[in-house]
Image (cartoon, rainbow, N blue to C red; front, side):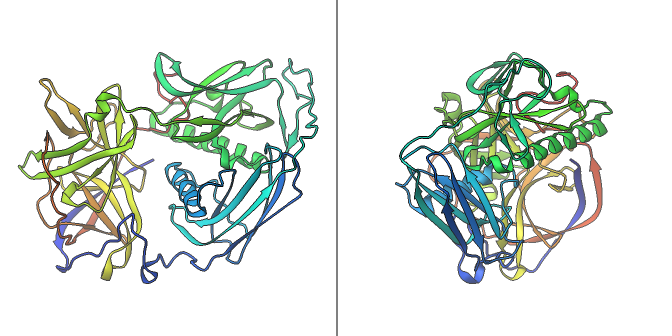
Length: 499
């Protein structure tokens, strides 16, 4: 992850208002993303139905560039559009593109179905950015009404070698010596976590843990999943070592025997997995999977609720915004609107319950926005430093500011600081920026709010949105700084403290 800074000068572009498509408003035909195949049509066929399994085949009329998702559900009370939107929303917050399919003809074996139950399988087009497109396919089917013999073995798994008796799927053998279960809330490493997974092991085979959405659990793609998880971990270790001059290896990440790990999960249904991996990072071919478990949304704490509502933000330069803080996910994050007095865009703001503080991070607000005569581009929320340089998200998102409660009860927004990172930027401003073909545009010509800023409760309604007139920011030269590494797998984060 790299921190990319653009030193820039401000030059006013033509004074015309930007036409911005709202995040929640469907695009007319003439404003659809031209990079997506809106004629894509998916078809679903189901065969070889047993008491607990079914073979699903998905085909479509597009090309290998068209991506899609498929899922099975027994919830027949909701409409197809409701089910698709829920699945698409879960994908958008998962920060992962691995579940996307690109094949024009794809076969999946559904397992662990309930006998005598009616299911529906839906396949729909969705881009890597989470935009649903094309014509979906759906088909209902009912499993046979009498449960059969599942078989399975009970080999002796007390050694450290290959374990017999487990089912072999996609070249991976289920290790009967491992038992994976979801514990829920608890304490690890003297820290409290909401979602802890436990692996009970009676052998000496090493493993790592991961969690997947239950709707995306596909045993026929198990080896691919294992390879992805291990490769992702290797890449992170290499990046961490290059930044900090350390020499950690994947062996520092492995569990042997009983193990616990914690994960940051959103409400939904999941499965936890143990994946066999040796000290050189090679997949051993062993796995174990938990039963499906549900993560429910928490009840919002009084401290969390204390941040909800309208706020007057008074900057160090006396510029004032009246913003709204709304619930995103109880005790986890909020959505902020009206920054720069603009009501069209929602900014995710993370919440730290231990500090009772809000964290403002750089982020992509919306991809493929229609900016009228300027064409399509991406809209970002980024930081500007005191030298007037903007920091893009090319190397990953970063912390810009923190809102907290000072002595005496005054709430304030101050810059994000990390003294352990040499050269961490001193952010004075946070703004919306449009990236149009590598050129960066502000959405307002008016003076922007400078931090630090006081934060006081506001009465009445928030201000009407300002007219958005772009100002071009012409990059002159780029500076790369070294940011904090924030990649976390479960509760264990690579740092000198943890190792």
